[in-house]
Image (cartoon, rainbow, N blue to C red; front, top):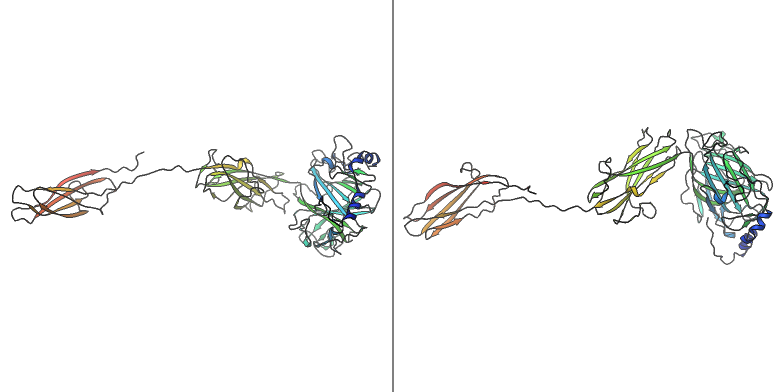
Length: 545
């Protein structure tokens, strides 16, 4: 939950309370002199994290603490005095359906202000006796030291949608079988007691597996964590708060480090991935006590398996890589995603969602899914019978209709049932250029055959009659004619007349010939019968360069 730097009217009590809890940075040297940390070194096998010294800074060179915690995530309370939110009256740990209300935290109960979480996979041998142990680090801060502190960190595999720092009203926590509940109970002095419960459903257990509830789903049997797989501390003196700035007086800060592998959360050969965490306070040490304040969930990446997605733009066949010169407008392209799960024994399942973005040529933007979301091209499922790791998944086709620079994005869904986390690829190697299409021209010749003839007579006066032209598809006037036309002839000899063909079209090479006949209506002259007068060998070529 977020807090504001501005101070609304009527919140003076909040300011005084917070100042009692967090002093000015300027007295940091005095604070460090007075601090009585529980330990100055990391105690869990293989880990360099100082999770049991009750402060936020590194005490031993080479170690880590909250100032340099690996993959640190911060959650901040709404923190607005009497309007702070909390779970509604009567909410218990086994309730997934909860109600968020405003202004219901009694002053003598834990009023949380922020929490931290971090995690890492050890490169050295951990408490499990092997390399690769997965460590979870937790920390909380509260407004007032009321002595005891009873808190629970809920670590979910799936995020709860619609739950934000401003949410008020009904919320259903998105719980999955195997989700974790880390209990943190501090009696006001000494070392906190840490425990672990897992979420049980009808698919994974019976009511006999429930810790306190009488029906499923429920939190399962409680497991006490010990000094071998965990450590924790609450500050016994004023300590510096270098992240939020300021100082924290006695009892306002608590932390824990847990080897989840040694605690049995992550088992060899089984994938599990957690993506969300939040903290909440109980009204007493009893597991069935009412829940009070909380800080809304933050996303985390906590898994013993991993996945990677590497994609390559392809042509329409889905196998040929788009050339470095790009493709032409109107081309169909696809994206090929290679999904790899780790360890190698894990078989990827799930699906890959593909999107594409269009940019101007010469730009460097990427289809990152946030600033540039692009167009959804579709989702391709990994075949249910897949037995390969890695596995290649190809997108549906996408036709590029404009020039530009195009970039793909591929997002692998992961598989929450198997515990395989998601992954994606939207690197610059996902981009390619679409070029304009070069114009071209072709010809298709069409011939309209026409003929002309000259009629003459040596005597007898003017010509009178008609000339008949006949076109044959041969070189010797044989075969059925394809065109015939009669043209009037009149006037002094000689007379030249022509055909006016507009309907017969020749589009292919071949030989053609004409016959000419003349019929005279002048009694002093005679006509002549149809005679083969001429031939043409026609060659049509439409393919010259």
